[in-house]
Image (cartoon, rainbow, N blue to C red; front, side):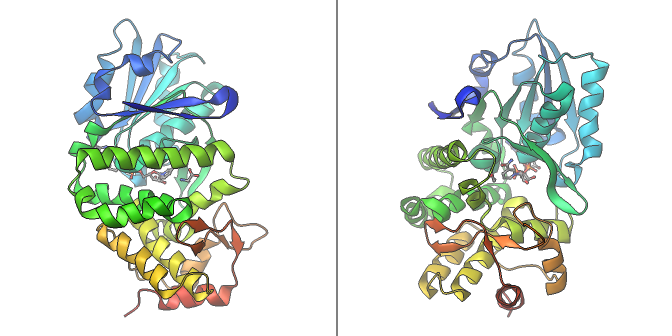
Length: 359
Ligand code: NAD
Ligand code: GLY
């Protein structure tokens, strides 16, 4: 097992990474101070992994909330089911919420914990690659709104993150690739050595070689933990973690939540960000091609859906990085070097939206 700490002063917490950690409940139980525990999960993950978590809590009062599976349920309406259960069971403010699942459950669980009685402790047990390398770490929590992705939320850090890499054995290939989009992101924004390693090892990684997979999760978490420690609430460098996300969120919202997986939309958005960086003269032809090639090698989509340019722009105007009505994007100065949010001239942005990925 590897342990990393997210260094946030009094709110610092460990990330435990290893195979079979679900059978070591003491790792997360040591952080729980009350006898009331609510486990939030979804129908798919419940069938696979709820039992070992719940049965570890003999002598506790354990409630479970099992949501339907899908990004389209990441809403305030479905979040309310958690509050209904917490209140029906008369859970107190020292009750602990455990989010067991992918990024949807982690984001919703964290937000429910941030809101219930103004904040109760919570623990992340991520079970997708995307959640293990990104969403479970760093305390961004929230839900979607019909008009914008992740628009309702809070920064709220967990007590610990427990990533059992064995849970990834039941993940299908499409979901596995979606997680790789966020892995590649770390290489692109701040870790060129990792990017080159991914170029050289992608085929074996797709076969889920356990040693390579462990390395990828650890290196991703280390990158994420460092960025979050430097800028917890995104006043600066944390925004670089949003490379490709403004395009990606527009795709997710515009095509209907769930039609593209988050990681797939991010992959397409990253290609668009690379194309725009190239149009601005910041990436050369070879660098742009390497970005797109690696994402394609990870079996991710690289071509945007049919969304009219005006609609794309309208969707991109709803983004947390924008200021004073101005679209601001994370782009690339080089592979391994992201910009901070930059104001983008609409005419160049239009060139990317109208030309990138079009036959
Ligand atoms: P997800 O939570 O929808 O999970 C993907 C699918 O895998 C679901 O169908 C789920 O039921 C299933 N699943 C989960 N674990 C499984 C397992 N071990 N075996 C088999 N199936 C399993 O999607 P995701 O890709 O994990 O997360 C995407 C979400 O994360 C988006 O809502 C995105 O906005 C959010 N996100 C948040 C952050 C953050 O910093 N908070 C960062 C990146 C993404
Ligand atoms: N995934 C973006 C962030 O955590 O900041």
